[in-house]
Image 1: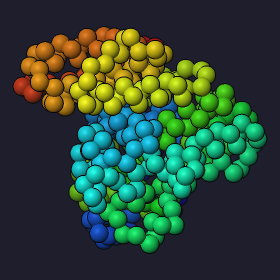
Image 2 (image 1 turned 135 degrees about the vertical axis):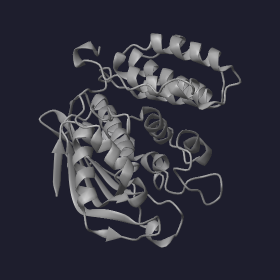
Image 3 (image 1 turned 180 degrees about the vertical axis):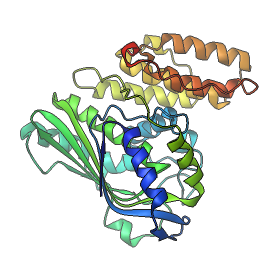
Image 4 (image 1 turned 120 degrees about the vertical axis):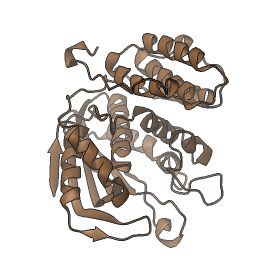
Amino acid sequence: MFITGETLDDVMLTVFERLIRSRNRVNPTKGDNRELFGVLLEIRQPRARLSRTETKGRLFSALGEFIWYLAGSDEFAFIDYYIKNGYQTDDGKSVFGAYGPRIFGLRGVDQFSEILQLLGRNSESRKAVLQLYSAEDLKFPPRDVPCTCTLQFVVRRKHLNLMVSMRSNDAYKGLPHDVFAFTMLQEIVARCLGVGLGNYKHSVGSLHLYDDDVRKAQDYISEGWQSALMMPPMPDGDPMDAVTKLVQAEEKIRRSEPVDVEQLPLPEYWKDMARLLQIFALTKGIAPLSMARKRKIVRIIKDNMSNKFYDGYIQLREQRLSPAEKPAQMRLGDPDEIR
């Protein structure tokens, strides 16, 4: 089965409609679900990686998970801060199947650096494959093993395409986060290589929808067609220095240490990422400040954002600081208004 669209929302709408109609019932350990087997998804505009719906417009958890990958971390507390109960741990401290250590140090190999070097030497190579699922995952029975098998980076016509292969994918909870993280990684690699951003393909063995999420998927479908808005492009040039500084800033923000984002030596694109992390921390309820003070700080940070694209997501997040107010609707805005 092949499903293609310009945006994540275009693809998810079709995926949910077909899964809800599916008669293929599966009863694995994680819960009853309906399944499509052998699916290829294509997103022709990888920067349209975020849902614009109220149901699935969740930027902050996806960003936190992506930075967890970039940090090369397997720390359970780190990812649990962003996605509560989203991962399981065998020892209370680490996640066995964490992607970060496998991307940057599987069996002592920094796969990310090797791929950059390989494509730098031979831009049309077909060998730039990053492995996440390992042979050891078949033998040991930890709670979490990678759902993603491989990522293949391919440069064609001076544009970087990415082909992801997954053994299993939760269409409601997992798919949006996976698309966000992998297309962000795709864009980072493209900037490192100095090539354009191509398309994104996402191959799944078992693409499934759990029974507990069917009603939520129906709510998503009821929101209908969404505007095709894209995240702003990453700045030209090698972004790895900025990525390192963002990872360092994230740790301080998560640990409630002071960070003056405006003084960070970062392009505005990456400062916006740090500002979003600050907003998440303030709205998570950990900081010992009054609701009024938190609202004021969030609005100051929002005013400092360099791009209006994020306004709707911030607005949804602000609701946590105003529980008595009528829930706000995401204001999608006009594409021409997005800087």
